Length: 70
Image (cartoon, rainbow, N blue to C red):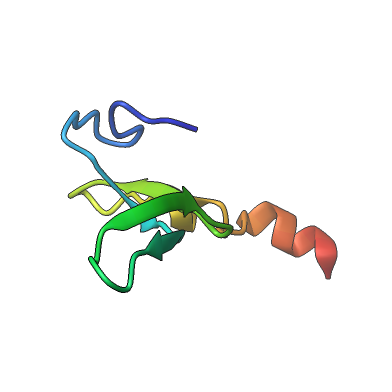
């Protein structure tokens, strides 16, 4: 999901963060980058100054759901 504002406080200055892996080929003689491509494991999430974080949101457990599992 792509956020343009924080769903909790409405702040429009949220930060996108994540990891980006890539493969590259470089000339050993000249050092020139010959080819670059994105690899596996690319992910991103969004966070806000109020503490909201889209990455953590997917791992939160609802207290009502927790009671049903027991």
